[in-house]
Length: 81
Image (spheres, rainbow, N blue to C red):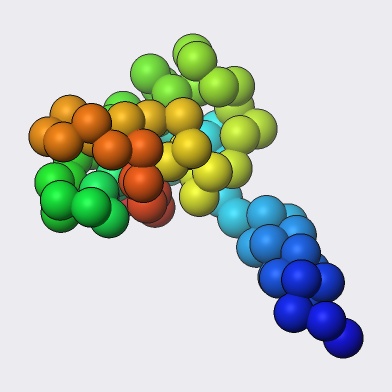
């Protein structure tokens, strides 16, 4: 199996089991974000993200839609708090 196909399968598998923003709201949890460029970190309320992205949006993909307030980078990693 080629590396590209394996990577595609791995991403699909993570999304299938990834928590979604609605799950975090029900558990009273938020989203922890950190910048892979400068190391800045912060917590974004799940309710705020649900208003923008919807309750079924996967938490690991939130980083695509946010920007670091420290350096302006879009290379953000996210996980539930």
